[in-house]
Image 1 (cartoon, rainbow, N blue to C red):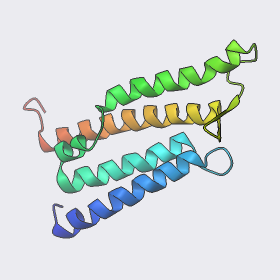
Image 2: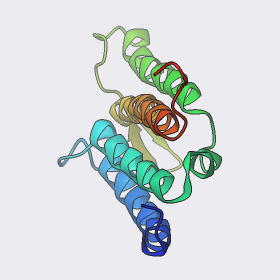
Image 3: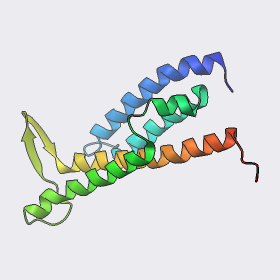
Image 4: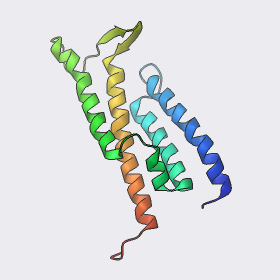
Length: 140
């Protein structure tokens, strides 16, 4: 499976899939998409890259270990609920604010948290499965 064609095209597809992933994340509340589907596309990009170049090369492209991304994602999702509570509104009620002339809201923060959580959890599982496939234990 380690072919020149796969190695060459995986670099291009990796970038393209990550851009599509961010696009899906950002358009999630107005059109189909969001943090979950965006993360699935990003995991697909990393899985393809890992198949072509190895898990260690794919891990080097990550800013943080996958399980740490899960923790950050849960924290961001939790923090997105706090503005509504602080304003005396029901939990998870969307709140919008302007930052440097850009209108932002808590729903996108929640989607970013979902994105990081799903991305980290699935990537951790996929990397673990691929490493186990290449290095089977002596017990099995």
